[in-house]
Length: 81
Image (cartoon, rainbow, N blue to C red; front, side, top):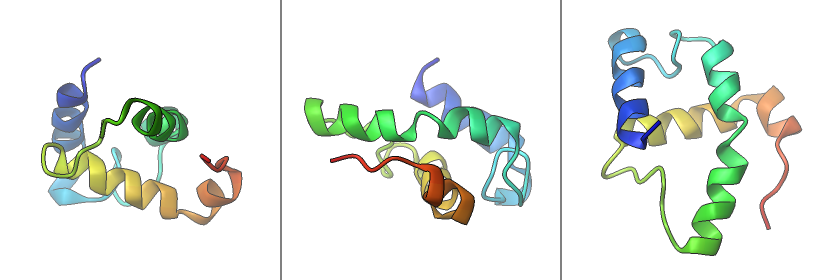
């Protein structure tokens, strides 16, 4: 799946601009995709890319920030050095 498709899916699944794929609360899709955020950051660091570029993918970048800010997520997410 391309990042463009994820951006469009978030637009379609996030009613009225709510922060997560299912609305105001973290759901299954958020957890499934959120499991890759540390990997995305690691790839960005090594490859010098920005997979979730806020200029290109504003909804997805905002989603990533919202997801990472959830207490349970922050406590369980490994640090990317």
